[in-house]
Length: 338
Image (cartoon, rainbow, N blue to C red; front, side, top):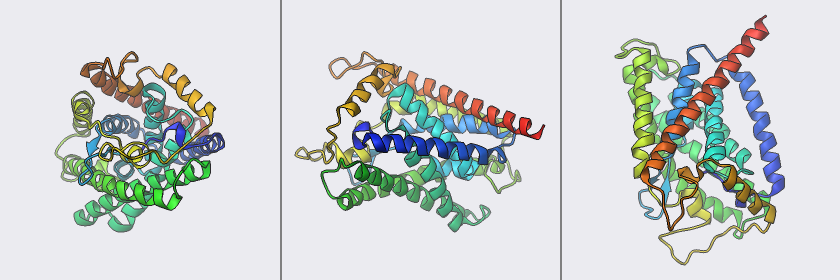
């Protein structure tokens, strides 16, 4: 659901970047009170896992020409709380954009809002409404599933608003919203399945990693549980990423291209040459555009090894950036105490 530059106007780009920056500043201040020392490593490892998992686009059931990928907002929120989850996901979005040209450079504010901030808080609110307390397994998993669906729908709805305000839609906003909601409902269901699978693993091996649960019944030590997530991150980034669907994701399918409908014409038009110039600049500064080597093309595709390298390198950069951010936040807490 990473937005491209063509979906927004320059005023919307500027406004959303300012809003995202302000929102992240507020979240960092809010997160300082929740950031215990042991959470820094947890945030880094979980952020690396979400980065790797987002590389694995899965084909959507009932929609052969479309794919989707994990957002991770509810998974992170259940473990870290929505404020820290939004900070972690924002770091992932920034790395994806700057290093891999995943999402437009001008649309980075939109993507932070649509993928990180809004889904984290909306998804967690729905999860808490249903789960109440995580002790009840049925309500816990039902809440996580419903929260995942809500997070996907919330992000997709905001995309429609941003495109409508930008004046780039060639179809009524209601039609675009219906299409986006239909596709992302399926994405949300798939997200829910993945989310409860990963949360189920944590709950069984180290339940105290989930907020509100104690360590009673833990099978592994905290370090071993985190090592398991790290191993899964490497497997996902190096191996599962090679199995990712090449079909357009739900957003691209909704407005740009539909392999299952050869006669489909894009429903967005952005004549601003400055938007397209930003794409050219972005392609020059991104180290591995589209998670591949810079010289790759349709005529000369890169080897699969470059995708694996991007998966591992991106995960490591995310982990380092998030860990450093957490350390800086911890340092600011100590400075304030003195």
